[in-house]
Length: 375
Image (cartoon, rainbow, N blue to C red; front, side, top):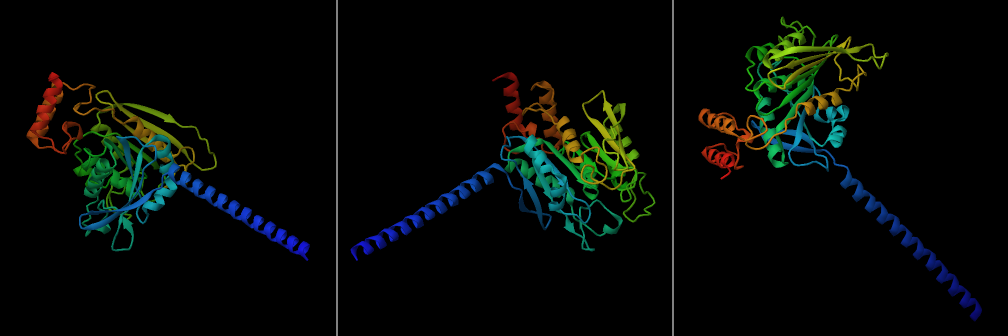
């Protein structure tokens, strides 16, 4: 009997040991999972949806900021097409991955809903005659907020977009050239009213990627408004306009390699250059291409997102506070420009705000004088 009791006790002890070992293993695995999730979440930034009040509306936007981003990093706006969404263009454009590789922030604004139940950005389509949404003001205000709140570049801020988003990018080039450094529309057009009224304060580098067989944003334009969007100019006319704005006198043509022979298209590039400034106008003409975002659908010889970023990166400015004319030094020329800005009450210039008080005034004159005279 004692032997049996002893045996039973040994068996019970053995069962408890196995149970304890299993609990320890479960706890160990659980902790490993927690550690993995913490490392994973901290390693890979996630886009977040935010709200921003402007013009009586609660606007929405996604913002993606890479974990490794540095102060004064570039900011890229990506606008969706008519009926599209911020989440949609964020998914298919792949800009978040490009931002991770190159260290810039990406903002995807969400358009409001029109009377037809479709999302849009207001560029004056004929069926939006009664819309009063100020998307230019919204973009300028949001850019200023993001630049300040996330310590992003006030100088190297850019805009691209698909179709309606590309149209808005052209409007920003005309009306917000002190906020945006360059724009790169994809399948975008210039409405006739935008073309007629366009008078940018600063010349601006322009990139357009467009298919010659685009059945939505017609290559040759639609000045008679046959398709119902409202009158708009053709791609060649728009490129010629911006070439003149940027005083381009040199043209470089190239036919890109037809890497994918099954997509039914190939690409011809037109590069317009200026001897008087560093701005250029690029056109990537997709022969037989449609209303596409190349690299995702349509032409597969180029990747529109990578090309757009390459263009923005090429025309990013290296700058220093006080170097208003970008000549690499703070000198008498900058003092004169600063005094003109104050006298003429021009738009806020980040480079002119030497004392960093978000205002350009006489105090900045004293600051730049002290800097030049090394007081």
